[in-house]
Length: 245
Image (tube, rainbow, N blue to C red):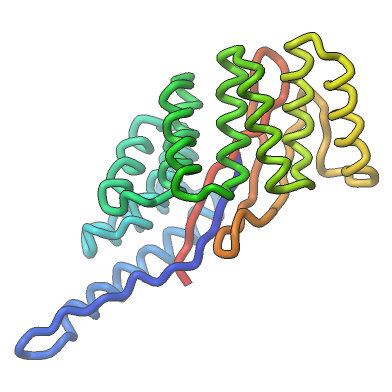
């Protein structure tokens, strides 16, 4: 699944008779815990990251990014139920939080609840119509429901938004294959080979994963890693992580 980093500073201040120091101090401390959580997350130390994000939330209960990143840490531990709870809280705080919908969709996907995954990816697309990864993941969820036509439509849209989206060619090829359109499948896999010629880190092997970084929008950078798909085929789902400055 793809990883996504957005720069955002959530500083705010409330004025009291004695000045603004109490709230500003708490907010900076929350950000400090948040930043530490990100460091531990990058080390795959999810338990410590969760503790840091939790401290950030205690100091700032409306810290949507802290809920998002704590959810990502739970996701990293494969605790999808707790991750869904935190993604949902992030959405309650910010109803236009495309990345929270996107990641919650990933968690539902892992639980094989493809209908709810599709609903969340659709919300992410509504908020950010240029979210290529959301089209890609929704296409994969449709594939799991054997809805090859919708899967092809979504992979095609992902490619339109990002013509070098190699994984989309791979998966669209499998969708064409599911419709017994061998020519379409071979064309997509040939395009994949053309785009990745000489690139060792990405492959269509049924047992290997993909890892690369690409831009979703002017403010969102994503790193995606592969996860398993239908039967023994390799599909690619993205996980999003957001950071503050």
